Image (cartoon, rainbow over all chains, first blue to last red; front, side, top):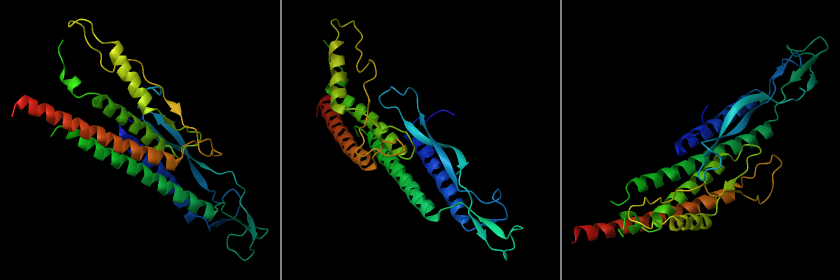
Length: 139
Length: 130
């Protein structure tokens, strides 16, 4: 996929990246309390992978660079086992396996993602105002 | 020796283009604030403007038959920003710094635009001869 052509492309791509991040975090939080009968089935927290994409030559003076979510990966964390023999999902030994989500961590990430979204939007709308004033130049 | 309309606009036309390019760069920094390993970049406006106007001067034509090349030449020098406080993931975007630079650059862009507008209305007055 090619890089951003203008400031609106940049905003679109960077904001979608943050949107992917927020959706991933929302899924994590929604599954924070879930348990499973084996460590393999337990929910694992997910994170998006971001990359920078450039327009044209990187050496040019006004080259645009946007962020893009290229992948979503599971964090490599071991699910905690809990001894709950009366739980319907408990295995033969009476253990259930909790999801690896840390809710506080997800909330902080969520906060950062929404700030990033706002910052990008603010920058784009400022530049949009400048553009429309430039279009009206000399009138 | 003829005087082009562009010369009537002075240095502001070039300044406006450069301010626009710097805004692009700063917006890119803001958009990449959460990419690990991204290095924030910027260029020095005054140095770049001086370099470009110098370039225009060195290519000034000696005959009316020559083609003038305003603003043409190799791309300028960009540099990486020195972070106020380096982060563990290698990202050097400092949101406070970037946003302030962006705000300042925006105001200066508008100033250049306003000055251009006045020049243009001045030229219009001359053309109309009112």
